[in-house]
Length: 315
Image (cartoon, rainbow, N blue to C red; front, side):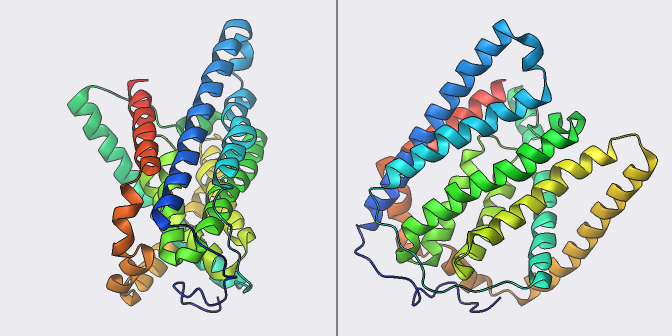
């Protein structure tokens, strides 16, 4: 990938900026309203379907559509509308990522997701043991799902919509405030938007990676491709492993093991070369942490998503 300094904004098209705290507040309010309306519609639709069309409710198509379609027609437009008050910034610089570089980013991302998923499982077990609350991992229902429906919703549609929301809309609104602000905010918003403790950790890390890719290249398509690849390995390959078809099980299992081993090795090499002091400042400058968290918008977003997480734990 060309131009490795993500903190540079010299190629961005400069526009008049509103105060950064106000920008954070507007984005937080947009996210809050998006989550609230999304959940209200989902609950309303699900209750209607359960009462009147119970067979439809139990179908794979409905379970996927009930989350993806409202996100597309409600969640994304609401965020776009509210954040329209923030001037958008675009970059005049465009760069490409080579195929080997993309594959390296992908395998490291997948390993990171796998490790953090295991950490999340332990955290959820601890919470369950302490509180008695036990929530089902939202990815568990995918294992027995129709593979074509999974491909349509989880592998193709969801990544496209989520990348438009969190990497295109949010990063373009915050690009002129610096790479750290734009990337951290998009990753933080992406993680909390999932609304459960199973996905929040790895969603944040993947959000950092995808955000850095978009910020560096100026091209959303690379993040969409990476997101699709990660979701494919996280949803379709487990279906193949659980398929009870020996050849398919073997192919999927070998693929997963190969990706994990390659990603682990490349990840260790990358960590050894990383300057964590500089990385921390690149992710979010310290002077922006206070205005990021201490504004009505972000506070409301954190509260709303915490309520969703608690309700999810309560079943």
